[in-house]
Length: 396
Ligand SMILES: *Cc1c(COP(=O)(O)O)cnc(C)c1O
Image 1: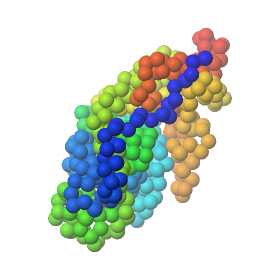
Image 2: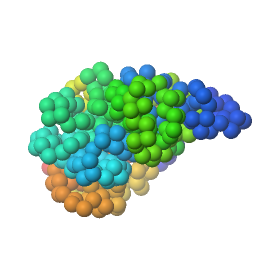
Image 3: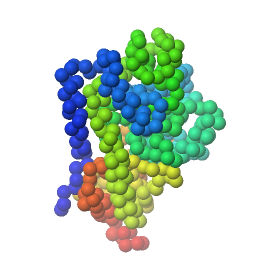
């Protein structure tokens, strides 16, 4: 049997990062606010904002920190209700709790996107919204922005796993009041850890800059409206969630690689999606009109399989060397809302639950070649045929 490819192997960091890190090790200048100007973190903020099409960017320690700071910068009162999708990573409700707010969960459909009926119904009672573009699947941002703008509810985009995705020609993360991205190793740009917040709102970003730990007059090193900073001097807590120059030195040389990674990731995904869609047992949700995806993994739903058959599929794929995670079936999965037991009033979300019990997740890192992608597709198709059983595979 052919060896299945290693989907956990990362792409090497570009050589230019080595020189930048070496220079930092020589100078010892690792803190973003030591140098009077042009610190790697500041340069990253300017470059990232230009790349994504936002006016301002603030680099921080993680996407979770960016989400937390976005909520805090909105000035939400304690116990403000924040609407989030019921299908997201546990870090998202956690950032809401961290910001002293209360997460309100809304249903997510079989296509991994926010259920707009449930969303609109719950919007009446919330003070802010976080939209997670989970695994890069973009919800209908036109409908969401129209509904939120009509009620004056601010939208924060959790674009942690969506860097490079576009909606109606705009980069995801630039549509809401603020957008948050991750540089954790499993995302499109890898610094181990790291995050960045973008916004066009000078006052919002000024508050976030101070909250992130620009103590005393360090905010003068941010090219944002200085009036806004002066207004907030000494009036906000300093949470110290800054990014280190070392992380920025590793991230900056990857920015020019983004377009290629997005192109390759999409081609890889679409190739495997087309092959899997040939199976009567597998449904791969298609992008919404206006959505251009940037995937580094594939999600698909098993159709017509029982719980036991679903488990048999996961085992059959694993026996052939391909790891499949069914979000709702793997033990303690951080993306299954019923495992967020740190929340006091966990609702039941029957639609989201049903989706999670059949939604499969397979990593497809952009470095895979066509033969490796075909091998993964062959294995998944063999495994589903075996699990669904010969009687059913022959069309009864
Ligand atoms: C990875 C991820 C996060 C958290 O990012 P960190 O940088 O690790 O804090 C949040 N939301 C989604 C959808 C993610 O995929």
